[in-house]
Image (cartoon, rainbow, N blue to C red; front, top):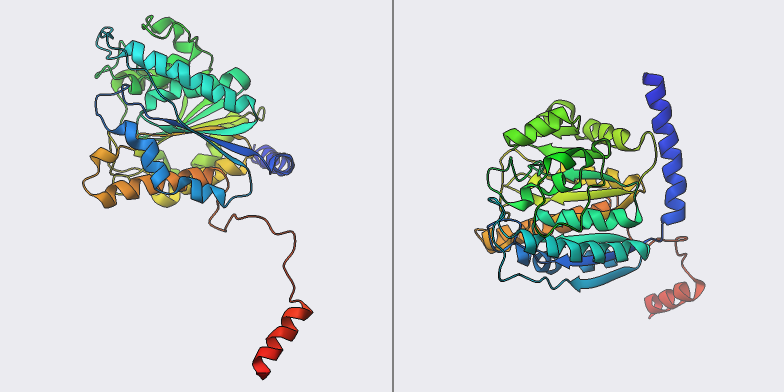
Length: 355
């Protein structure tokens, strides 16, 4: 088994190096999704602007591919949107996700790696579905303190940002009621194409689903026990060992410890360190298979100080940049060769010295 695992990793490394050669000049699309109705705390709709203000475009502009900023979507907030069971704003959330799905789908169809800036994590419903329309064999890596896999019948809060994954999974189709606003959406993802990383606050219904649907997940205890390198390796092997697939990375900033990302709505102690989160992003980039990404739940109104907000937004920029190839070794505009000192420069320099 050890020999087989080593062979698979060697094959993947060779495949990925070839894949990167063909995709080294990929382009990136940025879509802002200023939306907060998937939960009850206002302010997360300002997340996209906070991430931009933290220097996202400047950081990405130093990297060696075209960058397309499509600005922020303009979502409609329905005046009459009664609760469904205890789920608030279902029609507004459904409509926003339908709009986002169309925008993400168009970006992926155009050949871009699509980055969605949230907004709350209910937006992943539309982001992943829009990606799926043009990459039906995709797999999903969900990095979060929370599983977000409650159904409306198991959710303690009713908030749709804690139910996103249940809308996507085929295995939960018969457990999901018909939520108003989501008639356009049919489940499409298999549990075998999903991995969670960073869990540490899981509701009872979610725990039942994770265990009984055979979903691959890694809690912070697993990361403490095995280390982020082994967890990342196992996650990618689970998703990619049978077939190389486009990756959708859905990254909630609350996956990090609150000491690093305090400006978020549902912080949970004991989260990822900076090095763990960036290593994970770097390794996902190293597959050469990242096709779309969400970075969500930055809430500037919940930072106790301006420094707390800036730290959270800057961390989001670092994760996005690392996912797109900004390594700690450096990833800048490529050199074909090092410049050599010219004779003219040397002569000019000597002349100045003589003077």
